[in-house]
Amino acid sequence: SEGCLLDLPWEDILVPHILCHLPLRQLLGLQRVSKAFQALIQLYLANMRCFDSSQVWISSAVPRDAFLDLLKDNKVLQQLELQNCSDWLTDRELLPVIMRNHHLHHIQLKGCAQLSCHALMVISLNCPNLRRLSLAHCEWVDSLSLRSLADRCKALEAVDLTACRQLKDEAICYLVQKCSRLKSLSLAVNANVGDVAVEETAKCCPELEHLDLTGCLRVKNDSIRVLAEYCPKLRSLKVKHCHNVAESSLSVLRNRGVELDVEPLPQTALVLLQDMAGFAPFINLQI
Image 1 (cartoon, rainbow, N blue to C red):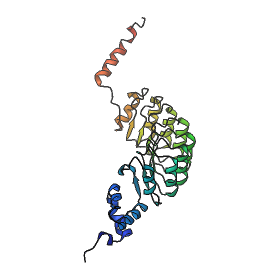
Image 2 (cartoon, helix red, strand yellow):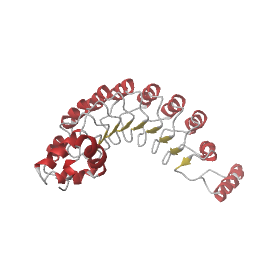
Image 3 (cartoon, helix red, strand yellow):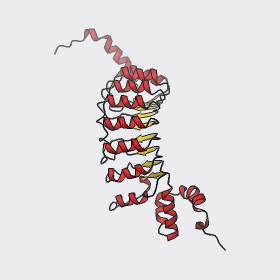
Image 4 (cartoon, one colour):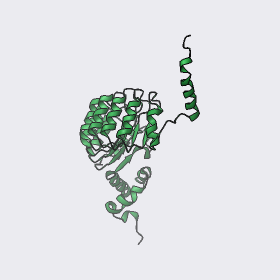
């Protein structure tokens, strides 16, 4: 007699070795084939290690119910990406998922603006093995919730705090002091971040490889020099729109092969500036 796909061992073969290679959107469609396939997909969802909301087309009419149904039985998630759920995701939907899944090491919440600082505290309490966290454009993140994260998630290697505008130097300093394993950090688009935070990051995080300071208007040359001195593994630095950072501090990093998002002044421009400086004593500034 001819065999059927469903005759293969579900937990030993189908779930870990076959279904994991199919897009989640297709797996959800298989549920409509038969009751047996529906049971199989439910088993897969309960044992799924990674959930990426961008892989699932969810009707705008019932996004919340669909999300809750997909993850209602899962307690083994390791990666949770919800960056395109900002229209509907609140603490009410997220927190039960977090509290059931204590093995999460990667959480992506970019742009989830309807959450609150309580969400970050719950993540801190329930995800001790967290290594990567994106809170970009989550303006609800405050210093108290960030301190909670730093106290309990010391294995963090990558944190994205882009446009978390409530945070000031003191909060960033506390984070890097507690999470010295950081390899990637974004503090972009935050006018409150200055030299104090950057210098403390450099001194506390010797493994740092990527730092994004885009639009940090208070950052100056001194902290960039400290960064060059204390972070030998730095591979990329973003300082676009940091108007107080000049080539004089960036040149050390540039010569070391660090990828920078600003170009050095052309040689002709440097010569022109030197010529202008040479004539400076003769310039009449009276108007």
